[in-house]
Image (cartoon, rainbow, N blue to C red; front, side, top):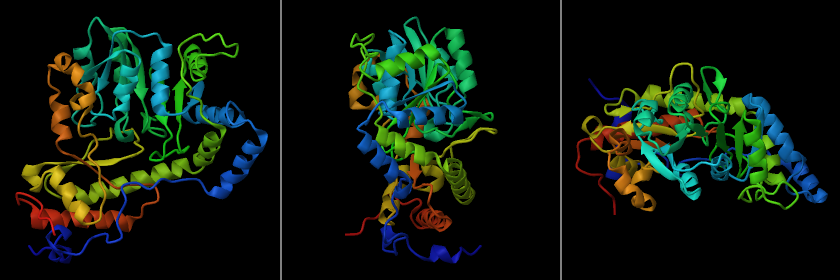
Length: 401
């Protein structure tokens, strides 16, 4: 059967034309129209109230309403929020976390003087496995910190059941997941607390910032005190807190970013579906699963590359795409348990994490952002097809001088 005309071009790694001579960035933040926030920023500066003001309170109210939770606490970053929820619940001992996640998940545990215990992931969703959590739980376990990886919900209800059986607290690193849903219920109200990121790569952007969402009124109040050094206002610190306040300017940007959020989420899901439909016929390419009834933010669009089927491994494909002008990432390589910072846990991580290691050797994250157009997705797909057709089975990507 004759190949399509697009296969006649060599990939750029073999001297063909670049798919994106102008370059295709990995991410392009969606920021509010400057005119929609400049008036607010001027008002904030003129007021002299740069923190602890009305914009932060308005953001907390709006996000609580959107997520359907009783409390939202705005903080300076998701990492600070994770540190606070662990600090304010007076934990000790071990916290079970995934290793296939951004390092901040484990960092928040370690910064609190707790020991991260790495558990394996579900092979389909790439999120923390409830079964693996129960296997890893021991007498020192005091909490679970699960991740909604790439914006895809883990199974929060099964995780709640596991936490109840073990008898521990449950938190979620929801950095990627503002706008994700599980069984038609917004991510944000599961477990003891969920913590979101509002950094530039996310769908909801504050430039920098985070949101702690919880239905636990006591936990919320302790986090509000904790974000201001643990000082409730009388300088008699009730706990060892942080300077984790969100500024009024960041809150104003986030409030403007809430406008059009659901449309951006729909757009990202449409683009992800376009990728999946087109790439799904290429040998050796597969995708993490989003469960039926769930919605992902697709903060990242990740594929898994099987060398036996595709003809190249994920690293070689990334190199070939770079030659095409396409920027990619390998999220998450290395997984956290393999990082230099966590070598001190190697004796305690004697059991392997076979699914994590298998997945980490195969992942490649492709460009996706809310304002991306269909033609850009199609050109990425065509580049992958040309690479597979001409380079598949070769021992390495041929680099041009």
